Amino acid sequence: MADSTFFAQILTPEGTLFVGDVNSVKVPGTNGAFQLLTRHAAILSSLEPGEVEVKQATSLQKFSISGGFIEMSQNCLTLIAESVQGQ
Amino acid sequence: MPNLRDIRNRITSINNTQQITKAMKMVAAAKLRKAQNRMLENRPYAGKLRDVVANLAASEVQGGEAYQTPALSPLLRQPVQTERVLVIVVGSDRGLCGGFNTNLFKAVEQELKGSLAEYHNQGRVDLVCVGRKSVAYFKKRNYSVTGEHPGFFDHLAFDTAADIMKTASTKFEDAVYDAVYIAYNEFKSVISQNRVVEQVLPINPDALTGNSSGKNSSKETGQASGVTGKVSQSVAQFIYEPNPKEILGRLLPLYLNVQFWKAVLESNAAEQGARMAAMDNATENAKELERTLRLKYNQARQSAITTEISEIVSGAAALQG
Image 1 (cartoon, rainbow over the protein chains, first blue to last red):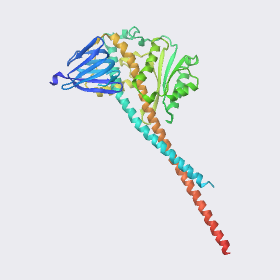
Image 2 (cartoon, rainbow over the protein chains, first blue to last red):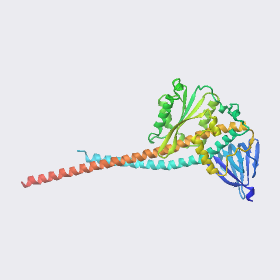
Image 3 (tube, chains in turn green, blue):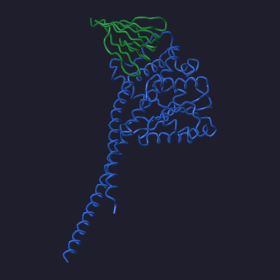
Image 4 (cartoon, rainbow over the protein chains, first blue to last red):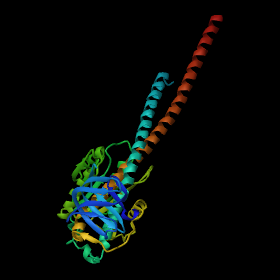
């Protein structure tokens, strides 16, 4: 199973919100929402205000963001959010 | 002969002062710790953001020179001639922190009379003051203060900082200002601060692409990669959504906000550090003062006793005789 996970982190100006290995991440992209799985092609996208869903093997976490960016390269995902409310 | 009671009163009052300064020092130490943590928490974010900007800048899609053109983003405007200058001064809200504010304000004034003298003399420099102390200082001296944010550090939040920078960058886009500077105290160590007056707009393209040997940038990316660990800096062929231009258009304001936020956090930590040092000094001085007063008091007391004894002795001698 280790194969289907990848490293993800969510960064905000006031701290690192999430770090860990995940199965998938769903984000509200500017061109529409999309989901990133392991070995996604290198991508840099801006995000709209909306909900981010982080899926791990046993849990699902949700974050509301007010916009930001997502970058994924070499199976490493980084989400930089301007501000995040709750989970 | 100094009055015994007067000295005693002074000793008590100095003792009280000492207690206050000691307490303030400890409060500052606690706040410093918090401020330092916030600074550290911001680092991965700031570092990553810089990486992304550098990545975009270096990407083939952008094609070197083209990326510097203002067409991509009005924030990349490189004014031919500087008409009006904005300086954002980040001071503190509270005093009792030694030369923290005074030194910074002096550095700003020096800058205004030095490299910015040309604009200053013609009244083409505006100031935005952050923190009660800087508002008070610059308004009293009749500088053109266009924005004031007293009490900024009471509720330190990224949003409020972003608002200040947004106002400044919008004015830069609208060509109201052609250059924007930030003046703040850089946190060097707990007991020392660096006064920094740095230019944030127009954006230096070299700084973005990471070509510069800027000490700050290298320090921060180093920190960031330590945290992110697995993220390596490669110029892989990225998919840009929706397109590089739009991403850059959104990224740059954020980049500026973060730059300002960083300055604010540094200044906040530096302030607490400065206060801690100042209060430590004050406590030491009070101790010293108390010691000398105590000596004086004992001397006075001794001489008072001596006089009393000799009076009694001479009185007894007179009776006997």
